[in-house]
Length: 315
Image 1: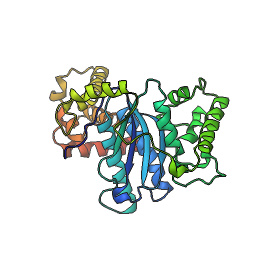
Image 2 (image 1 turned 45 degrees about the vertical axis):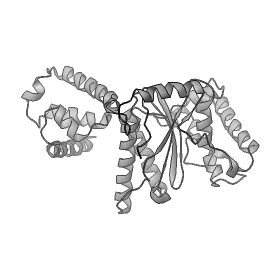
Image 3 (image 1 turned 180 degrees about the vertical axis):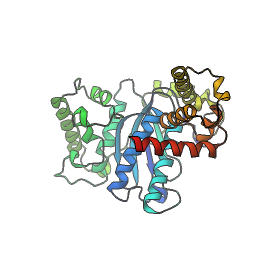
Image 4 (image 1 turned 90 degrees about the vertical axis):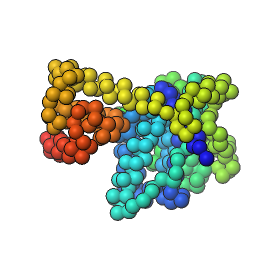
């Protein structure tokens, strides 16, 4: 069967869920959870994701993320593959960590309370899973973004965006009083909804939003090429960002575009640009080598490892 189409566009918001292979654990201890959040932060830097909420469970995670560059697929591919490699390396395992395709429901973000619905569901997930006793506050679960929401700005990761969810709750200022109001609202909802095992999720379809939102998404889907993938357009945002980085670095070095071909494959300037592209975009090593006229993937990989060792020792 063809895969469901991934609809990507700048500013799209998704409620993402990914489970462990055969529903096995994707987090064996708190070290894994720290690793995942670190990897998520790196993915946000590379793909410019803005996270509105997250919750790490035992064998799955929930993530509400916005994609200013319309690059869900590239960013999630990097996040899941990188975490899988780190998980397997840490525990001396091999094979798949995640089960098949992650689920990504498109979420309407232009009012209507749909963003609030998926974020609240994400933050209440530990209760639904029975990980919090009745006497425990939601804040006591350490592996969701709610604790970050209820903390001061200086204690939050830079990639977590709180203003939109606070706004949908009618909380206009990110103050101590506003944060207490958010906590009180979630605790009240928790009490009102009774048995958490009976709670319904945001939906089993492919979007969370109004019929108007659905029609807009269907129109976007009809414009895509191919039945199994979104086509070459999914790479457009990565390409534009990479070209902007290259242009900026060339201006800084007073190089012309033609000088990329004139200078040696292992030129220090070209290696530095390649390192920045690896750090700030989801381009592969092979794509970077081809764009910067740096020979084969293996040649560039070796130079990038050397560059990283040198700069880490300096820092």
